[in-house]
Image (tube, helix red, strand yellow):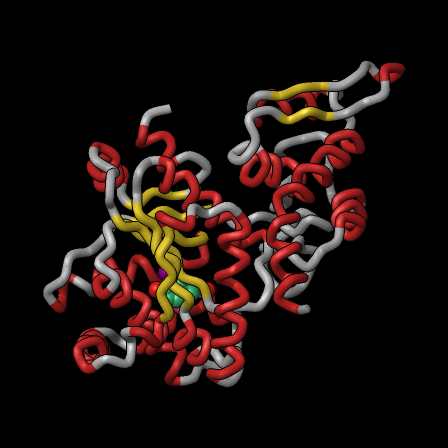
Length: 326
Ligand code: IYR
């Protein structure tokens, strides 16, 4: 796999191809980031962007994880002290999940977002951006609550982070795209360069195949889940024998194989008793999806394998959480 393929695999959107291709020509030492509002427990939505970061580290890039404490505060996620506590828990779970400690820099937003230069640049952006533009950028992140002034400051700060952390590339879920588009328009207005972005897909709800799995409603998988919890959730997952279920639905079992399992394991073994044809082995996602569609692989067997691999992926983070709680 060449560098561009590794950098762009499994992303839903590359902004723009030309800019990312240019980065892929010499990825060594380039700085890439993803930011998260801290929450105490890493879930499968965080893990998806983290898989991308692992690819980028493999391509030679330096990864910055922004623990966006001030952003979480602006989005009403608790007192500042509570947010600091959950941020520290989150940092430890990321490392346990498999990011390379030597190539990962963790930064707290409050380390630099309260400095004079940053705040003055923020005010410059406020002067240059309409309320309407900032609100639209924030709509998906904010989740429909009444807008506060903090909600329009938030995306401007996210845009500025990209300059202040000296980044070459921004990574985020597709829900961050409007903020990134604002960044690309507005940073040049105040004398800074726009940066390229990669957007990871939003995985469907495990139970129903609709919407976004990382949201608080619906069935998700997190580092808090026990082996039995995972088995139970995966076994009752929506998994029709097709990549493209009707309407707006997705097949979440296939999505998790594609975005979580295959990027982290060389081969996937689906265990089956001999009387049902014996074990199946897959080197790539396409082969597994084809077998599910053709009927060669039964959804129940696919789910069994998925639960095993997911359990392996979250086991180190689960262990870390347990240690932190002792
Ligand atoms: N908007 C993100 C959190 C966030 C991301 C980045 I990238 C920042 O520079 C700042 C905040 C979220 O929805 O979690």
